[in-house]
Image (cartoon, rainbow, N blue to C red; front, side, top):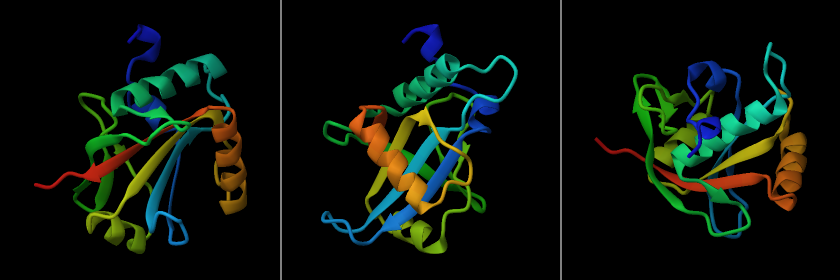
Length: 156
């Protein structure tokens, strides 16, 4: 891994757009989805290339693969810390707190349900609703700009 693809720290992760939803109509059965993406560059010195390098660092840290292939099992990456669900994204000192998943989503995941994490390399606007997320996922998947993995819950 090159320095440009190092696992990013909390400053970058704090700016991510993270969404969760439970798909109960999937042909594969219920699936708890988690989307991680980044809004367009807006901070001083932030560029599309730098953002993509940080996202690729996260993808490497998580063991994600192209969405066009088989979804890899990426191990026990989700855990409960106090009142929060967190994702170990490969940084030695920091985790990503999953913002506001529904009680139903958490119960399904903690009960051993299937989770699919999608990391999108293209920018997405904060606060995107279900239709915008659906269009985003179709676009990044069609352009091979999505990376995926299946995290499990860490059991103590």
